[in-house]
Amino acid sequence: MDDLKAQGSTEYVGSSDVLLAWWYKTVYSYRAPNDHTPVHLHFASSLRSRSVFAQDSPLAHPYTNNAVSYLPVPPIPINAFVNESLGELALRLRRAIVAYNADAASLRADLRWLFEGSNATKMAFPCPPGAEFSFTTNWRDGKLGALDFSGAVVSESKSEAAAGRVIFVHTVSSSDKPLPVRGSGCVLMEDDDVVWMGQVRGSKDWERIREAGAIVFA
Image (cartoon, rainbow, N blue to C red; front, side, top):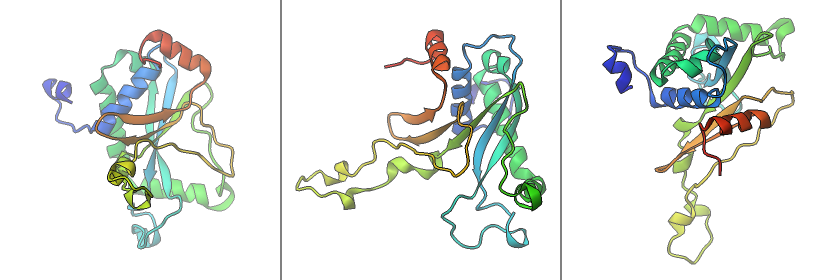
């Protein structure tokens, strides 16, 4: 963010933009600097506060079931992850988010296409032939690491509050449809020390990432 300001940019980028830009730059670090394969990034985005429901209004009542769509980022060539700075990549992501949030009409049109007529319940493949894709869900705003489970702890110890602290979050995906998950992942939670993330990659991918030295493996 400081680098962008030093370059004269006044556009906002958030910490999650930087975090995800770092992650994609890391996992594609072993790819060739002249590899122009397009990567289609999709970020899960809650629909609850969007004006896409009855009378083009947000949801009027709490809704505990799934209510997400996927925010598409314009295709990014793989060599951009290799050659561009962290700030430039973060700015790409932020611009996509700003454009998505500003275009409720297109979102409503996408939802109509997804849920009306012959398209209902169908899922379009997330990228065209010859391209790659990645889905990412970011749960940082959920502050799962701050949940207090001390009331559920049965102990005679005086440190019950510490015993009820969240130390790790793990996810299990469930769906009645086959979902393409390779290349996809989630920002799970954060605490004072780390940000916990998960990613589905093939064993060959992980080995190449390890060889590139971008990540230290235990």
